[in-house]
Structure formats: C-alpha cells, structure tokens
Image (tube, rainbow, N blue to C red):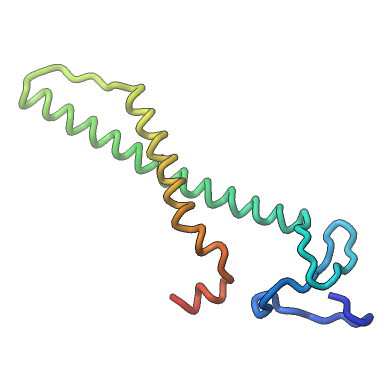
Length: 128
C-alpha cells in the first residue's frame, strides 16, 4: 500500500478494517478504506466456494451411495430369506436418494462452515 510515496507492508490479519490495497487490474494502489471488491478477491472467494461445494457434494454422494447399497443389501436379505420373496433394485429411487443425500450434505456443510468463513484464520486457530 502506498502512503506518502512509501511502501508500507500491512498484515491484513491484524487490521480491524480494510485499509485499501492493490487493484489487480492496474497494479495501482487503492485509496484507504476502499470498500470496492476487486476481481482478484472475488475470484478467490469463488474458488474457495467451489472447493467447499465439491467436497461437501462428494462426501454426500459417497454417503448416499453407501447408504443405498447397504439398504438394498439388507432389503435383499430380509425379502429372500425371511419373507421368501423376490427382490429387485428400484434404481430411480436409489439415484434420487443418492442425489438428495449429496445436496443435503452440501447444505449442511455450508450452514456449518458459514460462520467460520467470516472469521480470520488466526482467530479460528487460536480457538482450537
């Protein structure tokens, strides 16, 4: 950040509020207390959001797939051994359950992470 023609290094984790920065498009310094969101900042937020969503969806899909397989296996055992009936897999219901579990895990993950994402990393590490 440029102040009076001098370069001053600022640790953003120790600042109580925004104090400007560098415009990634031009490389020029920004005015103090600039509340403009520059593309570089938005791009970083979008990348982190994508990573979180991919992680939550993958975990949910794996959990849903495992749940569908176990439910189908136990249903097969009960129907063929105890009730002496034929068993067939209901594929559309299984796929819907896997997708619904992935979406539910994504929602639950974002709800649990939203508060943490607004805090500074150093604050979170100190709490743990």
